[in-house]
Length: 84
Image 1 (cartoon, helix red, strand yellow):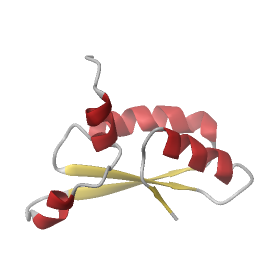
Image 2: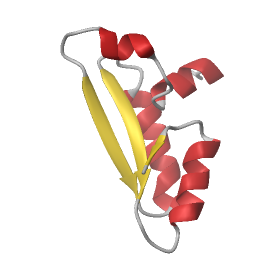
Image 3: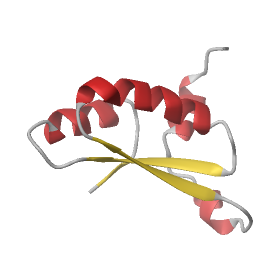
Image 4: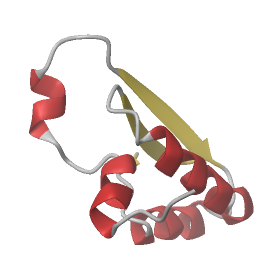
């Protein structure tokens, strides 16, 4: 596996891209709900790999609960767009 640059990493984590919504075709959005920080990092790694496919967009949400703040911080620190 090759390393990715910061730009590719942020694109994979659903960075804002207006052209994404303007183009029609077979594009899909994957919503990932992270319950705690422990499985959060592997999910970020999988999202990075899925984001290399231009037909996919990955978005994240922190599940409600005691670790929601920690998860939201992890996701924001990785540059992911965190949905409410």
